[in-house]
Image 1 (cartoon, one colour):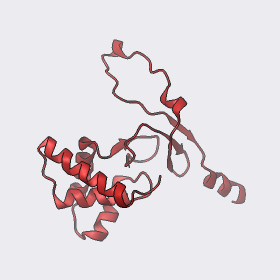
Image 2 (cartoon, rainbow, N blue to C red; image 1 turned 180 degrees about the horizontal axis):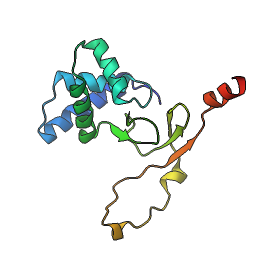
Image 3 (cartoon, rainbow, N blue to C red; image 1 turned 135 degrees about the vertical axis):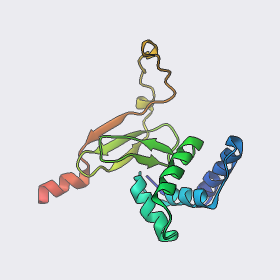
Length: 153
């Protein structure tokens, strides 16, 4: 995923400010800082990775604060949470419809934009009492880097 820069990043920060007002949440400096860190990271970071990056800017910040703030950012809709078969939940700054490639060896997550995947017919889930609001396709395999390590290792 491409890191958000310049105007895109500023627009996402303004969107966050608006969403906080709409939801009656305080737009604190800590929340803004944590969002900036997530937007600056170049992949789908785990909460631990976000904590490490935030602690470089604000030594001593509580891990609990970072975790709770990440959940708040998801609730406001400025980032999403993506789960996969890897070790930890990942956070995603791409809030557009997209899907993921997941490496089963290194846990790398790569965004895939594909109109055919977007158009998949979603099964009727009403018998389960479930109302779908979104879906993502997750394609799992071995990334190029891990395959090359296997060949040379």
